[in-house]
Image (cartoon, rainbow, N blue to C red):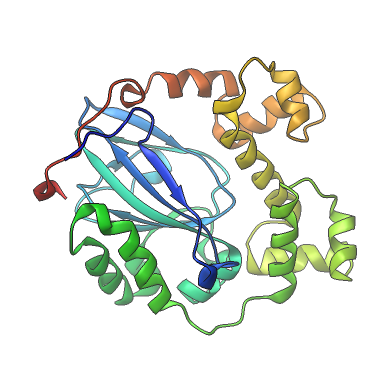
Length: 282
């Protein structure tokens, strides 16, 4: 098989139109066969379904549930980063669900999942076995497509909270840069009612959700920071100043943006190209 180009260890696909409003993105992680390494997973303002196509990594601390022999997980509305470690090839596929998608795919509001990591079968029961079997049966390269197909099958007709769904769309379109009074005004409700709906259906406040969106957009732009200093970068992403950005980054990531950049550059697979594993390893 063809080797993977450098820095293409992570890829992301937009959802098909039939899943728009339910799914933020589908994603695929391919970590080359390197010495034991640790990867920091950051909050992304979503609830994620995660399936290991390869052997499972080992989670640390709050992520300790991530370990063999389990292959599929739910990552709740996390507010802090967590670490996973592994040695050798790892291939992981997943989907980032919006609050409406959590209700339609998992049959419950995001609030009930909390901020932790759960086994998928603890959340959706026997449907987890079906999803896992569908994703893992076949060539590894097709795992992400099979995940998309099975989610189309498993989505229910449960109605999501319309007020929250509209507010989430508005916040994401604004990259999280919207005042709560303006958001409430759009929804024609009081800010108190808006917060109550977010806490009931998402598990976090609308303001915290907006902050997570802003943080996620900033993280995604780090590779494109170029010669911009941290002060300008902070302003470009809606932070009042550099200190505001650094403090919020530390709150969600556990380290400063400078430390995160250095940590990312030390990842051994971002430099040399890495071969795809033999299919029998999947």
